[in-house]
Image (tube, rainbow, N blue to C red; front, side, top):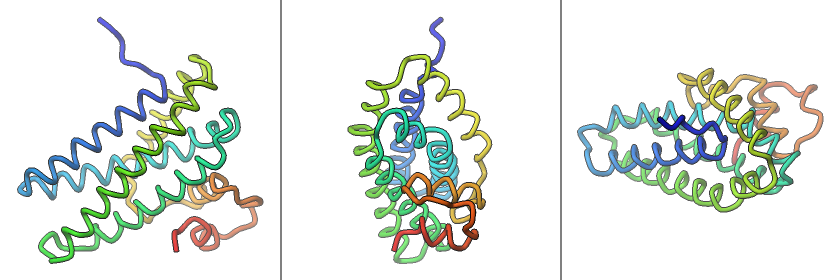
Length: 185
């Protein structure tokens, strides 16, 4: 029996396929919407936090993906802001459908970009061993963040997000200052 890949690129792509499957369920079966939104929110937040904590710093520092990481970090913040709006809405709100579509479009765009820039760069520039180490760290961080709610990042999470955006000297910043740095306008 073949063991499941621990390559971080494969693991990220596997999450992307699961998110796409949940989005398809949202579209095809409105009766499953509450469950699918809960599931996609949990996976997106945990996936994003794990990438931000473990993958993006390595992609930036070891694979030279500086601009791509900053852009991906901005897209995570945008998706999280949309998730917060969605979580605050009633599923019967007439605007719910358009906010859901905004989330699907935003995340779909992010997945496409990440799979065409950051992930191939990591596959080319990092050894198999390094990608496997990162995969283990990614899985541990993702498990740790399952259940985190959108908009409820810790100060440490926000500091890492700011560093991913290229913000220096985050140690002297308050949680609110860090949130301002990483929140899309």
